[in-house]
Length: 402
Image (cartoon, rainbow, N blue to C red; front, side, top):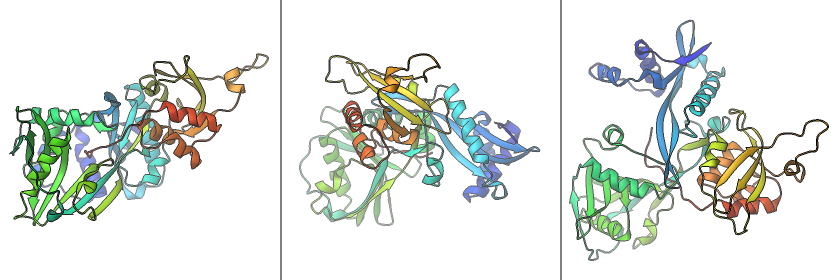
């Protein structure tokens, strides 16, 4: 079996596999547009005798982590013909993709799983949930006077993107969008927008929504402060003669909207969403901002990482956090025969977790104490408590799909 990038003349084979696996059909008039936008170097395939058996896309993207842009490899379009499934082909593709991401400096990877247990086997872990609400229009907060104004159908992508990025930096795991992404993946022809402006004309929030079948369907509700939230809610409430309810989709997990309603007993769902994994642990930790230790000197912890799909992460490490909160992860080598053992290694075995747990903790989705309590993080309890103090509280979110 050969694993390699696809070539331009393999577009038809790739599209046929996608159509079969994801159960859709591209219209003949749309096929050529798809061909023009096909970027073969972003697609990897497993071949045997010239036949495409399975494939995936590796997208060069960036995520916000602690307010900074981090290179991320997005995995999408994973597909295998049914007669070739359960033969380890996708495992081989993911292994190649991980090494490729490491070589390209993509220290994180994200994907939307068809099966969470399947991708957990390869080191990916759920890193964010989203909420979904169905709110009767008469349950909206009482209309109150708010300063500012709302303008409908503003399609200035630079303006919308500016509000989005100010909002996105508050969360770990939000996509760093550009204008092309907005055009292709976010703002559709049937979508309406509404932008909240302050009295001085500063845009501080927006809605991305549709009105259909007697409902407001809100795909994005983005606000930078409470005035923007209240102004946009008042705008939605003014649709009371047109709709019976508003459906909010993919709301960040820390959202408080139901609490603000006159009656919070509306339909609410919390949905585990995208998965992430640290591709290169030492690089990720080297750019991470830990909470500055209370002690005058650095904090040092031993950490054993399990990562069967990325061997460069596997093994024993020393995590050191400087008084300024700067992290460093360095390997702890076993003592050679006849030489004294490394005291950092021999003092105690240290903490122990897999790459999935490490990803969930460092992105802020789960806390070290939680992971220690349920056995996902093991070792000395004092070390788990120290790690709890070192990792800052950071909510996670993602509004996009790929």
